[in-house]
Structure formats: structure tokens, C-alpha cells
Image (cartoon, rainbow, N blue to C red):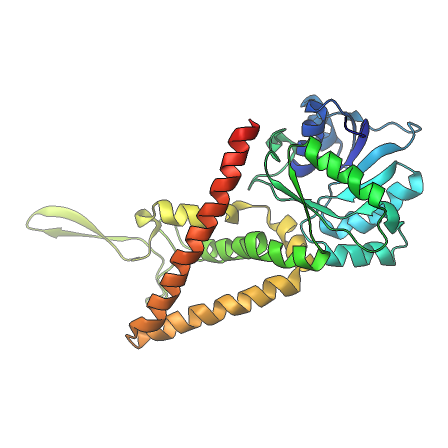
Amino acid sequence: MSPIRRVVVIGCGLIGTSVACALRRAGVRVELADHDPWALAQAARMGAGTALRAGAGPADVVVIATPPSSVAAVLREAQARGLGRVYTDVASAKSRILAEVERSGCDLSCYVPGHPMAGREVSGPGAARAGLFEARTWALCPHPALSPGALRTVAALATACGAEVRLLAPDAHDRAAAAVSHLPLVLSAALAARFATGDQDGPADPASGMASGTETGTETGTRYEVDRDAGGLSLAAGALRDVTRVAGSPAGMWRDILAHNATPVADLLDELTRDLSRVAAALRAADDGPVAEVLARGNEGHARIVRALSRTREAERAAS
């Protein structure tokens, strides 16, 4: 039987509300807090829990589901108020937050850094799902000051949400999150940014300095239109949509995430830039070798990604 009876969730966004809904489905009493009354009210209407009341006593766990830059301050305040016996967060960067928590004077023995590896490209409590974490990895990052009992309690919370717990050192977590989550977001945004200017057909033509569009002409009495923009969105299909899907994620949230995991993401960007520069140079020199090598490694990496995601989907089907 789960040792968790009552949980306080601070932050009623997508992840916080999804955690609350998952715990409610598991029979846990959940109380909610958020500085935004609208978000709090919407989460409560969705059945995620009730508003936190003063004087209710310490909860078994307090889940801090706020942006990375505010985790340390929220944790310090929550501990000062005695809101819980054990505390965790759901931010997607860990090393810098742990350092900020330590500098702020928080009690580290009951703080379990955590990160459920699940999300959506939409935000807010209305996007929350009770099943968001089913068969997904929930990373927990033990540190030397952590109580084993606190770790067991938060592991039980993640399991109650349907997730599979994985223990990682904070720096190992940050490198992994950079590779599988943060770098893909930056690449998706950088590609989508190529289409941020110009009209609906695509970006401006850099050679002519003219905005994209069409020219009308005739040939043997038949009217036709010639698109001046060879890269226009009129040719867009599934590949562009798939690669840029996460570029629609909230920019403010991601600025905060990237700032808290800057070095691992920057290191990966440097590695990728070297590959792209080699490909660009090879294309200009009509040298097929580097292009073929990158494409072959891409095939190998894609196969590994597909296998890993297939295992996740199989586990999700088994859990449903």
C-alpha cells in the first residue's frame, strides 16, 4: 500500500495539474496552490484537487511544479511554512537548481530533485492529463544529504502516477535531458525560425531582397503562377511539420529551462554544428563522403530511437 495519503502541488500548469490528476485517480488527497487564481480554479474544476487551506498540517509530499528559476525560493518558503514532510520538484534541469537550493539554506535531507520525462507542446492546466506519466520515465536525482526515506516516498509518488522510476546523478540527468529533450527543442525552434518572416508562402528571398509571393504569366494562352520563393511553405509537408512540432512550445518557459541547463545544451550544439559544417563544406565541394557518413550515422541513431520508443509504447499499452 502506498505510504502517500496527502500531497500538496504548488503550480497548476500542465505538469503540476497532471501530477495532481494522476494522484487523485490513485486515491490520494491533493491540495493545490498557485499564484494565478485562474489556473488554480481551472485545475480544481478539472478534479485535480482542492485549494490549499492554512493550518492543514504537513502533507506527505509537496510537489513543486514551478519554472526552474523559482524552485529554490518556492521550496524555501514551503519548508518555512511546514507544508510537507518530503519535497520534490519536476523541473527538467537539476544540477543548477540543487546548487540554488543549497545556497538558499533549504533542508536538503527531505528534498528529492525529480523530473518526469513527459510533456506536451501545449501548456496550462487545461492541457493536463491524468495518464500523462503512464509508462514514462520519472528521473529522481539523489544527493549526499538526502534521506533514504524521502527518496522512497517520492519514488512511491512517481509510481502512483504510473511512471517508472530511474535514479540518476544530477549532472548525468542534465546531460541526458539535454540530448533527448532540450537540444531537439532548440533545433526545432531554429528550423521553424527560418519561416518567421515573409508571408504565408515562406521567408523572404534573400537573393532578391523581395518578399515571397507569386508572379503571373501566360504560356500558350494558359494562365499560370510562378512562386518566386523556392523554399515556400506552399511545398511544406509532413517532414517540416514533424521536425518543427515542439517549436510551438512556450518560449518563456524554455528560456528558463535552457538557462538552467546551458552548458550541456551548448556542448551538444557545438558537436552538432561541427557535423553540419562538415556537411555544408562537403556539399559545396561535391564531396559525397562526409554527407554519406552523417546520413549513415543518422540511420543508425534513428533505429536506436525507434527501438527505445517502441518499448515505451509497449509499456504504455500494457499499463492502459
